[in-house]
Image 1: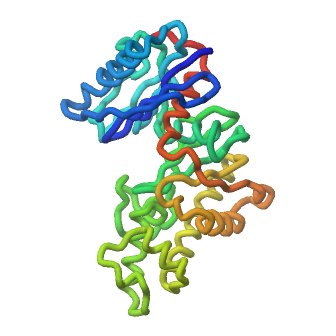
Image 2: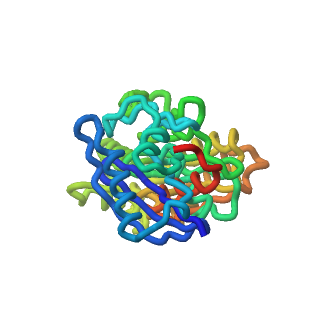
Image 3: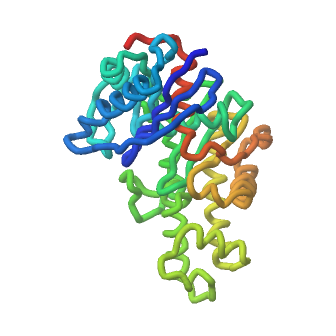
Length: 317
């Protein structure tokens, strides 16, 4: 039996998981992400944590496939990181540098693509070879898996579906600097933004007016209570979701679309709403595309990172 590590590198914490080659998660833990000094300590900290674990558990290096790691920024197929602003990183090769620190084979990919790979392997897309994953949280992220492989693109930015323009007349700027991105309407913050704008333009009675600090969950809960204004707001959100997911799937033609992130906790109403408008906008022959909820939670990125190393021939450290 062979083993290995899946690492999900975030801006606050680094999630490290230890797997066997069948994809069984045997152990997991977290360490802080130290971003001071342009993130110079991040890789040494990861290496030290992995090596300490090997020593504590008396694990033989001969039994290890290596380390897969998901990075919150663009990464190409050769492991070149094209900058991670929230970590303070510039351009460098993470496959080489982490390999030198650990003496183990390393493969790397974008964190969203790793989460998608994890979900298609062991989560909501299990049993499929091709999948689009959309994550609706503070922002909108995405990952694309075709024939079992994550798509990175030339610049490592494939799967940035949250920044597809769906509203060309938008006057407020997205966090990316553009206007009218999906993220401005379908993220948790975007849904709250839509709700506040709708409340300001109307004097209609609504449960939403009773919340001092309105959240995305409040909008969904109010809609579940048949609040008319909340239902109208979510209907607008579903239009945007269906529209942009149909656009993506006209290009990708996946077997399944998996919805994740905090907004996906809304469950079946979210799936039904997005799929209803997806069917309206999608190429007719692709209406059979299945929609599912992500199921691996915060472990998805680690699963996908390990799958990356599992699928590859051993690269040199």
